Length: 207
Image 1 (cartoon, rainbow, N blue to C red):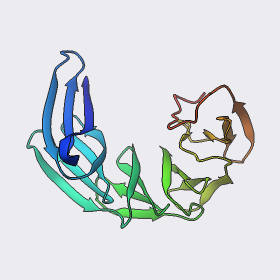
Image 2 (image 1 turned 120 degrees about the horizontal axis):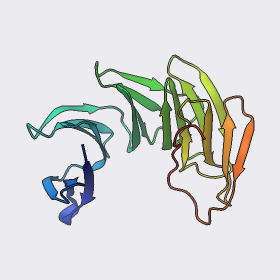
Image 3 (image 1 turned 180 degrees about the horizontal axis):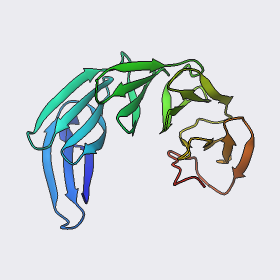
């Protein structure tokens, strides 16, 4: 809808929330709050999902200017989230992913291989990738089980699944190389050339 969400830090440790209209170039400040909002994403043109440092999520209605939902998802420190259809994968310092269903508001926990803070998530189809600060990469099936697991040689700040969910990419070493694997742990490519460590990575399509 040509709208951009902007979540920024203001004075006195407050969070400020804006919407920028890309067409009219109009910037509108919606509110400021002392709640530690860390990440935001449109759910639809009227609703926004927020992740809070306190491991809570908020669904905020832009029309009513009220919270539709505020829910505790874990007992650690929030890290990041990724939306996929009607589900959201939420990571925190525990290394355990929480899958939040936007329709039922139920939470399912997914764990096994990752033992420390989640720093990257990929979420495609029924597969969710968890990259954690113990340099572990795992791909879990929402129906149960680990489809892929591997130790990296560097913190996987950048990691993602391809659109079909049959490939994954992540920073593999301190030279900023990116390894591309299939789910059978076959190395497909090693991409070189980045001069700085990644702090994000996203597949565009399949290749």
